[in-house]
Image 1 (cartoon, one colour):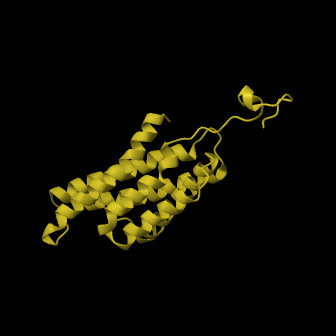
Image 2: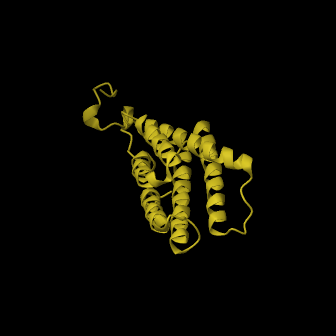
Image 3: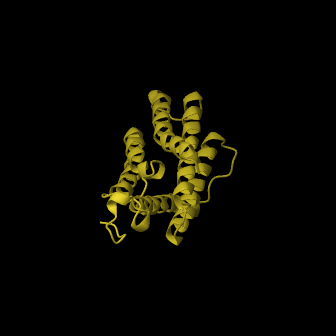
Length: 191
């Protein structure tokens, strides 16, 4: 997957969440959230959020040599995204069947568990010193919006920070024979 696509998806998630938050605020000025222009625009932005998350999940689950853990976490994340997308579509199109209750319960857990795992695996592979911060930011973003939908802007900022390893790949330093000559000793080993 190209860096441009990953970057676009990484930008889309927080921006679309902020758009959804703004539309939700505009829709609720009359103390009622429901079908109408702002409702529809907000949910369209929310759908864009899920597309961005899906692109990033695939990018993190498919590095050059994916681990079984990354593949499993990618599948879980995509299943959770599917559940959230279904619920969002039923908000936009009330004639669609509702997501079955067991999936409504399991979907968010699959999304969160998968995303947290993918972020941990990706950040560690990129050798971030504080790799653990990225999954914790995703957890905080999810808990924030789960506690109160009015905190969507806070959640958007937290997700924007949490997703950095997904779209801003850090190149790993070459080692051994692939290391730059000035870093190799006379024996060919790296310092």
